[in-house]
Image (cartoon, rainbow, N blue to C red; front, top):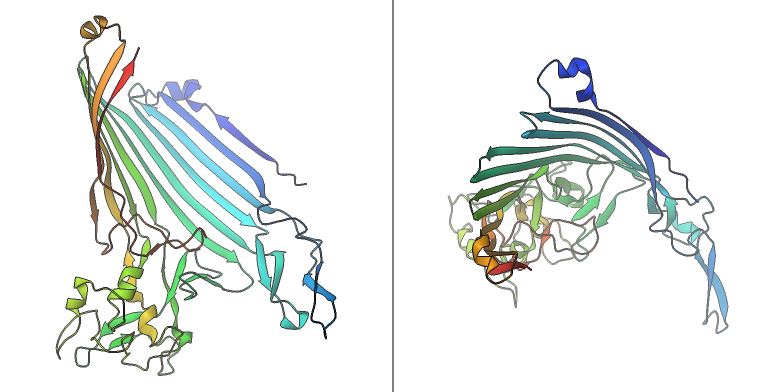
Length: 412
């Protein structure tokens, strides 16, 4: 059983006489809240118990052995969240603003923490770890025009979030079929990417040059570093609704900025090497081909990964560090016209003749325009797995379709 209290206060300051006398605010409300919440996901049946399992072939005899370490102190994850916000109304509430700051701290995370191998186990479930999310959210609603025939309203929202792992027993490497490209590390955000940082391609040799983090003159696994994460710095949207007599028009624009995407399509098809049964992308034509070429794509070789100028290190994928290069990590920022809708409502006089209250005809387009520097098919993608800590991968994912439809809303 868990106990998680919470509470909040609000002050309708706009109803105070000294605020009314300012003749500025139609609405002014200040609020704050503080509370705890619990999460027991991850605590399965008997998760806190020491378990044994039976088997055979113990010197050709049946037997039992411990299969799970006991942890009688296992408990819920706890999230402590503080919120403070304000609501403003101006110009007879034709302009309203909602602003919120939040600080969300989750501790006693349920994690499989490594233990000494002499225990007979690699890890066991503990309440160990903490993560913090804090940020700012802003929403603006406005009635721009409100005449008899023409109306125009706008809604804008934007959200900033900063994520940081504040306590972790050890690094947890994840993602991309065992390549451990994603990593959870104390002091960094979740969904971080751990790669070899490519500095440039040598114009003389066509070999890639990587940052030697420990300055030992070689590029080894010790030189992998966090070079970005899949979390956007901010996201937001803009909606406009316009109507003129019987016609209406609305459009929604969505955007996000600052997130990284691991382009696994380029990983396989623009890696600088040759492989059987692997396709080809036109960007491979931009590779280094002769001395003096300036490019970020190394020369073509018969290896599955291009050699490095400063001592490449072998890995499990045949070749060297080029297969885990930051060159495949791209900016996933974008602005997208998500929906565009045009409608027409038939006149009431016409509908009375057929005993129908309302008919609205409409045409709608989705994903009509996208503005991005991302080189893949769709920047709004994350196809690694269901693991929330391995976001930001593009395995040549089919892009969101651009659709067009027409329809009618009928009210009897």
